[in-house]
Length: 387
Image (cartoon, rainbow, N blue to C red):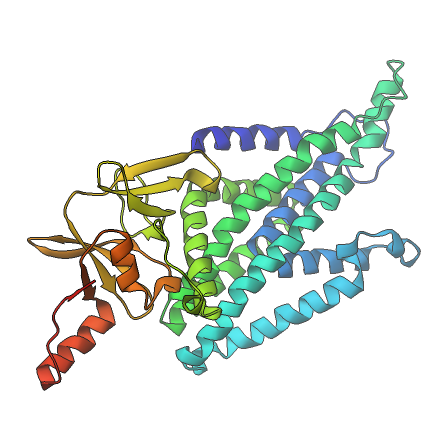
């Protein structure tokens, strides 16, 4: 599937960057150059949506004569790019002060930034369509001039090019955005401010290289953007799973979902390790199948037909963690985490165990350490509890 997506994007890139023969210099900017610039802009916006679309909008507004600015798309109007760049500036100040701020105080802002990045990504998606359509308007003079010599002056193929390439622009944007968004999730789960700063610096560096190469040469910028896109394709699946995992945990913690959650017979869970070829952090539901085995049902890319795998037939227990429960595989060598339940199931471990036909609940992680300390100090035994 990844190989087919790679060839599809390469083919569409060649098609999109193709410059039709020019009959006369009716347009000061060749269509191929316009396509190269748009590809760089789409890639840059995908890396950092709010900064990218705000900067592109401001640039187009400044470069457009005053009499024509009212005709610009919404993202190039001051009422949009002004507040957008202001929010980016506030985020930059937060990041600059990050190393001096305790992690406990900084993480809530990182949670908010995760949702801000997702929201700005959705907003930026609306800018990709008019941006691509504006680019393909540059094809109209050349296409009509070429067809005029053949007696088809009334045919305008620019709309056809736009209809073909707008979905491609959205596909490129989606692939690069989901990989870039993974940086926000990694920042959220990272306990070290230095790692957070390094990740954000890397994203800013990547964005600056896209803008820099495009300014030096539109074709060089397009070539560099193509390399970034091709690198993002094999990472898209991993990034999507990480994004779903991070958003689920952040939302559950931010909204105190555990206070209103009812455990059903097939609770949601994430694979904690690769099982039967299904990658880690895949989202699905866990239940008992007809044979009484624990089965995990999931959908690839969330929309493909449902698939079911059977978990290893060993003894299982529910682990009571500090932030979220786990499904443990108990063997002679010890216990191993096989599923991670979202934080919404925190404090519902006994109901999880009962619903899955399990009889044992164990403390894990920080809770296990606290139980061990209580036992050491003589405040009570750290024995497994039955559901």
